[in-house]
Length: 410
Image 1 (cartoon, one colour):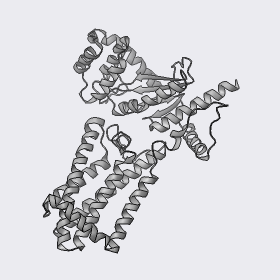
Image 2 (tube, helix red, strand yellow):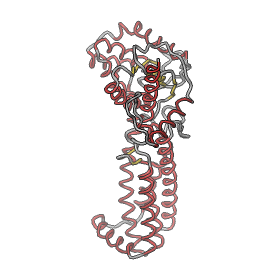
Image 3 (cartoon, one colour):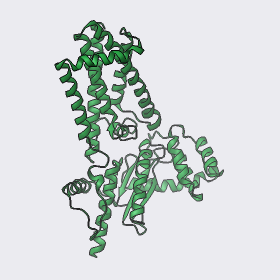
Image 4 (cartoon, one colour):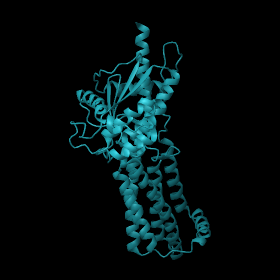
């Protein structure tokens, strides 16, 4: 490995490590602070939050960003070892780097596809990581490598030498220990306010200190949020959750998928106590004059299609299809999907009259100055963009607890 290639490899590894470490920090904040806003959330499509909190953001509870930081750290340590060791070690390191970079390239290609094509979102920090991995892969190809079949044997021999070298062993142990500590301190999905459950007087709810702290945290955040009034009936429910939705909005799709089990749990534990209402707010100037620069050209048609499918109880199937095909929505594709999914061929005939109902929802959103989708209103508390699932569930539980307490005192 020439000095020039080694320096370039080291620079890319350090840049990638810094970006992955920053991503890990942002992910940590998002998982531990319900009010945290990421600095790299620039728009609906340029959003680190949407990527980190998606199903592609973690592997068995471990952030992908943290795994990336570990990968870059290993590349960095190997590159430095190649410059300070023997020629034989440098030759072996070239093979190790080629294997690592090949695995890394495959991983970022998958994550890039998931981000751009599945989620429809771009994470700027992730893009830096992708570029660094690609650069390392290209550089590793320029390093004189060894036969792949000999790499396991060479790795075993080098590990033996590492164990017999106190300084190198100390560095390896410290690095692995630091990584394990980072994994251990990262909040799990079940931690924090997610542990809150709605209780009523006499339920015998626990009084553990951590539960009280979590309750206090979510209460402080929740009580600081703006409150609005909506003319949407509760229909006997104690908690009303209203979502202003755009079927072509990636974040709307993500929250739909994440919150669906939450509403199911409340319906199971407190039947009829939580009412969920989805209102249409398409970011499409065709039907929404409040978004003259809206970018979702098929959103009005999508809203109409769901309303038509609802006549025969097929609205959930239609909704799922729209969320899964956001990039290709158009009048023709939506019309065809409605006919295929719901067996309805009157889309064009009923479009204009059905669109009037969509515009009524838009007017309702205008009264509370909707700025983006999704926007949630939970018992009057306005949340732009939604919350992480555990905090969203905790907020509903808090409102349900308060409503139950009010009913008991009356």
